[in-house]
Image (cartoon, rainbow, N blue to C red):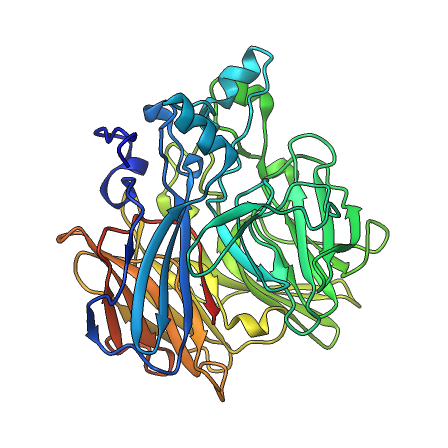
Length: 464
């Protein structure tokens, strides 16, 4: 894009495969190594931060970048690639001005120290969801953007007929059996947590405040058939520290660690809180009900990972798949590690089972280094305890992988695991399609992407 100046960066969040791309591409009939299965048809999608203009490059935070969607449309054994910026009002304003206007997260303290509250750009750069036949991309704390498929055109912000009045998480949960979507929004000023249920018609049917004592970063939630689950953990917004040059969130063990379980249409009067060990989780794998217990699985770390952690071992910040069982009758909590060997994140399941008991969970494996990267994918079996590993090989880095069921699938794992893979040596990207029932084997298809796909956040599979 001619108006974008492509500078050299030194910030690690802007170098290597975090370096932004600016050209919006449409490429059909992509080259394939292997064969694209003819029993899937749909869109593999990935969103992530891709700054058009970088605010204060030394202090740039990974969460700051403008949203960019990368899509591979697969049908009839062929693939088409597209990438598009999320066409936000903030990005349009900055492009018209020819420079950045909205400050990054690490700059907020400067403004607060001056008694100013800067504007926030709704980037839509974090995660995606489909509900009521519509596709949305979202950021932490903005309004969802409705986007058309497969062309990835931003159609505008979506307020659910003005029935959702709070900011919107990046991780709502959809119950495909009821058609409802559970969502929440957290804030740095009261109310610290709002919760909504959106009916299958796309309008909120229930909205309430959930009381928590401090403003925290609550990135994810979980649902079961009858409950919604909120983690109240020690990643706390600290304005005094922020104004003195500290990070925008900080680790505060005094906040405690607890999990709230509220009936789907419940409120403060019906929520149950369960204390757990000091820990943090960014991403939930799934939750479900078994008798009197709610089973909750997520990637658990000892620290939050995005707060100031000078002198902290990087492994303290990385997750491992973990399970808690909360007994709603006795109040007992059982906590156990599912995996003590590998560090991982971005856990995903067959989306048709969100909120219901699943056997298989897929997650991206960390390679431990100064800037950890994902170098493989894992498949966890809740029945046998087996962990399978899919290796991408030397110089390869991946990200979140998603499960795509075969057309007319007959089993939970009857389908494919799909992700983007970056080859550091070649500085090139591919879309890999892995047979989920032959998980450790080579991909059935490696789709060559005509431009590099920078690392991003979350992915999605949306069947045609």
